[in-house]
Image (tube, rainbow, N blue to C red; front, side, top):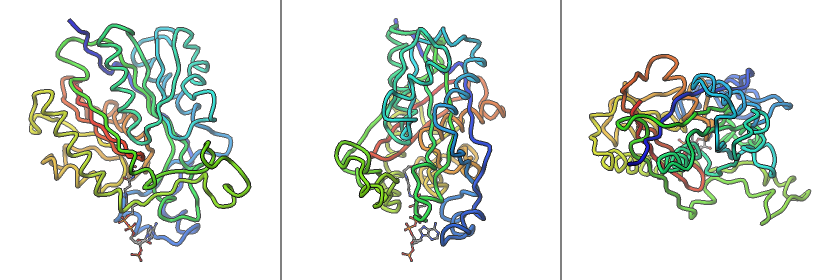
Length: 327
Ligand code: UT7
């Protein structure tokens, strides 16, 4: 007998400041019309200079714990999915652990870009299922805007900041995570990357002058891979769990681009009204996008007890994944 693992509390947080399309029109050569029609984004939240990733992770985690009715000391593992850690060492997961006072937990980070939250769910689910741990926090937290080059219109209009957190714990047999799968293909490395600051190029005046610490993206090359990968892995996960696409009550995809979301839904054969989108308000918040969206759906009653919800993500790496959950 194995133990099913499910989400038993969620929370999210984001900076109060926003950057609208009109603001961006004043910074780079772009237009509200281009951004809206090509991405669906109207605004994104942007951290202030003195705000950083763990702060939003802590806020989201506290809310998730409260809603789960648990204390920080009840959690045995804190997995923080992030591409924009507070610093290279220690992990943002460990920093969040200290801030929460989660003195019985191990804290760690997962680096899987926009798929990081699903990587975290997948790992934690198996640890709960096999009885290694009972309760864990999976957090997606990002301050992407500090890695964005505001002279590069192909990236600066896309990304926003925020965090979402889920408390995972034991749930009855027919509930929780029913199937989950993650994949990567590192041959897509240069399609979305920040080459500077690591052991390969180091940090020097030259890497900084050349802007190598900023995200660089070949968005149109990733677009088709993203649609194909998310649709394929979602179909596989639905089938592995013994369901059909028609059984799905709601799809909560990574919010990369409204056109990507629409194309994935169309490939899968899921009607528009069963697909959640908040990209207009938040932009692309990488690993935070799914937990923020999922929490919004739970808080607004869009997800009800018993609903079958499909999550799917694609991100730099390339990484991708899908998770099917019965709430
Ligand atoms: O988060 C997960 C990983 N990331 C993704 O999955 C990203 C996937 N890709 C995308 O979302 C889209 O490719 C973008 C939104 C990034 C770009 O949209 P696109 O429709 O693929 O545009 P494009 O890159 O093919 O560029 C089309 C044109 C180009 O002009 P020319 O060469 O046709 O004259 C660009 O220079 O649009 C131009 N352009 C812009 N124009 C106004 C690119 N960015 C902008 C901009 N404003 N912000």
